[in-house]
Image (cartoon, rainbow, N blue to C red; front, side):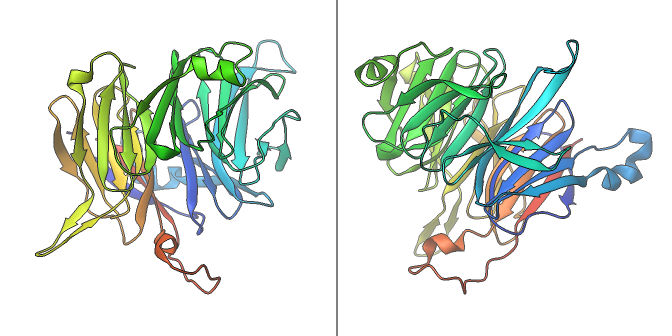
Length: 352
């Protein structure tokens, strides 16, 4: 198991962190928050001979603020509209009001796009398909939409007729998978076919009961694409496979055992190491655990980062990024502006 050098990112949004993604082509990190901000960071460990300068390579490049909370973000690299041999980076975010917005850090502008966007409630997830050159957008009002990044318009729309909200989503080159309310998991082939509305939309999905009893929090396809992993609010993770049910299993995690009781924490976030079957899980206990899915064993647990919950983990070949936020408001009986939350924090763990 890798050893890590841990560094804390400075100038982090204080409000609840809603999403975080690596843009590995640029060694950059995107972070959205419930305060309406989207932040762009440069991440670099530095060359080995300049290791002391590594702390200077973790810095905020820009931050923009929108008028309403931002729930998720993604990006696409597309042929330039201005120069035939260039590629353009386009950054997107989804709002709590169902808007899809485009972020331009060079001009410091955030603008709504996709005039034919039908979402009226929060955009729960954005995920890109590099092979299909599309951005897939899910929302709380039972919609899956396909965005063409060249025209910035919606090209396909699927409304889930069973009224289930999309809680999380993932895709690879071949499949799109969603976790919905009522403990349902659905997947379909990519690219999406035309005309999948109403009754025809039902036939395009394979639907199964989740391997977990309580509300799902996250879902990720395995690196091989042969299965998926889901997590829930009751401290459990399920590993399931598309074509071999005999291989499926589930395990308990992110729990605190006391003499006469057990505290169970939600498993908020999942992330795979890019090159193997190593899974990272983050929970509201403030911990990150590491699991080998081949041996079905925990192989590492990081020391608790702070008293906040781990709300997002992202990984690439070089580093692990962990975001923590105070989610104690979720257990308050009454919502109040007087509630004082601890500020969010982000940690970068460079792999040795």
